[in-house]
Length: 595
View 1 (cartoon, rainbow, N blue to C red):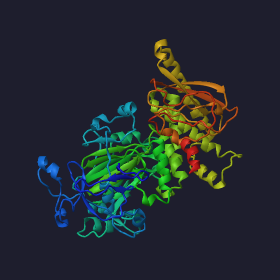
View 2: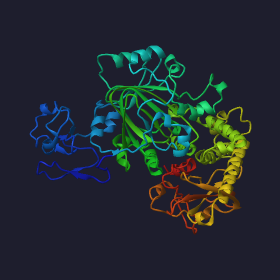
View 3: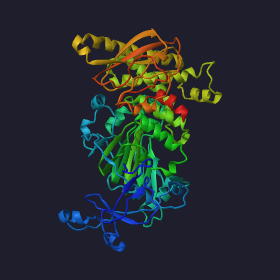
View 4: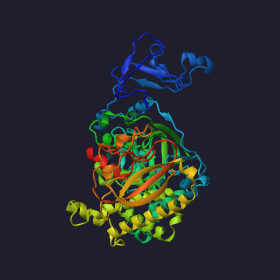
């Protein structure tokens, strides 16, 4: 992340001159002095102070300042220049400057956090691994061995891709300088541009879905993706010939200096990403509640074009991947992508059962900020109904096969489906258009949606209750003293909306007791761990007088007062998810009403 902040400008000096410090508000500068960065110590100096002519700078590949040159030798040849000039995203977006290389200049002026994301072998990435460690951070796999996938040859060309998917196939081409789509391109034109000798623009293709083409048929996605993907596991196979969410297989073709600004993949989908040729640099922002709040405001703000999103958050992680590498991007991670050399990538999006709450949260954000239908996950609500139907069957026949992460997600899913079905009731205050849309997305196999949501809720609660009764018998009096009890209330009454959510860390046990209480009685006590997360909560909790609710006690083996704790009643007590968790969809629903 940048060492400069828009709201807190900091000074920067050239160590070789006596100039007074110059204010550096964010990364926009008004002067035109030329600077050069030492590739060893990363210190910036005026080229004038170094008495380095501009033409000589053009020939430098790796610059060593006078101090570092003593131990590392003289300059090699790669320039790292930074001109202090105003970079206006608004101008770029309106096509006034037409300079795509300014994105690279912005990135060069930033400092990013070195990532510590898990790097594992392909044969280690199994369902058991996901059940144990979760799918909470990007996962890196150096080579395809053990992933049980089949990818195109590293010698593939865009001309070959065009021939296999069809020369007349329409393709969305993005002008990198403006981040806008260019109309009326087909694969024949794109191949001529990409493989041709002259490129007068920096253009990028990131949304060519190739399922059902000869190229797509020759590709086999990683085994773990096939095992997780709801399109494969909950969507009826007989329907795939007619309709299904066609998001499973994309071919991305990017020329050098392509850049895609910060975004979240639609519907909170996770992504697999395999580099065939070239390389990519990702800039990741963790999907914490405060960061999601900032992202939602940023994408709907008129100031978006003037703001580099990474400057708004505490940490932005840089990840470089090259040909042969595979990466799994989890639900909700905010990211931008830079292409340092021509690249061809095969990727795909998928929903799964190991972060259902996160997926629902992103879906709600998309609705709140009015993301166009074209850029949303197709059939999102319909696939959630199919998932509810599938998981209800599992809960009836083999509930012990579910992981704790899935159990947690099913609580969220049951509430989501209950909320949808309640909008179909005669006394609901939804528009006829919204009611029609909800009905259209309920599968014909689900004849009574309210009944399914109630049954799913009862089954998951019964399963969690049974598991915790068994766990209680195994706890002696000493071990009980190491647990903290936390309260979360989930509305149990048929067809009503949720008031609070289940949002817990990995190591939990759940204990359910039925009773009547006023949700206003719930108080959330603040803690240092949750200081940032508290910003995501509403300042008040709506009352739900005399509703029948379930008390779900969340317990964690920790001495910290993290998460949710019941205390004395206070006014305007915030709802605080536990530290490190992703905000649940109904918290987002309540929170983003203020945007």
